[in-house]
Length: 207
Image: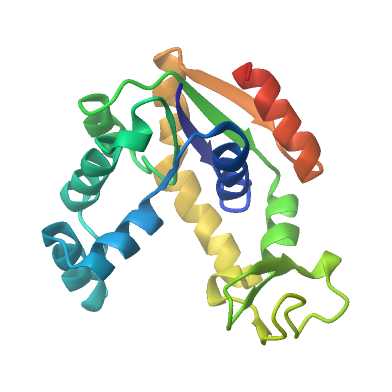
């Protein structure tokens, strides 16, 4: 099954995609991961992307789409995948139509209050990279796994989160209508507990 996760920042796209990878074997295909991998490996697409990033510009669609096309051609994606963070725009979705067959698009619906609580409480370890939420930490400054320093990412600060939501509404929400018209969209409410949300996702997918 070829799946797309849509949803605002903090909806849980990455969390649930990672869990599907571990428990069901669907590779999690993230544009962020692809960019980092191509840049690290020095591929032609990675070098092109790095040039734009170094200049503080957005990576053009043709570069991102090229990476997606290459990634979907790899062996582990032949029996299904979860796209996390792509497409972000209708233009990217139209390009994806020429690359892969999509079976279902899950729109993870979440309120703005939930997004603010989830993201503003997120902390990242500067040593091991693990991610935690303050609601589950005894000490918000120390990583419980390695003892490293925990920090709040700049894009997890409330004012930045609100801006990210504005960008999502402007650029990505039109995808909901696009895939709804294609008959592929299923809405899933994910304001609750992560385990409950994941069970709802599995139920909708029938897996």
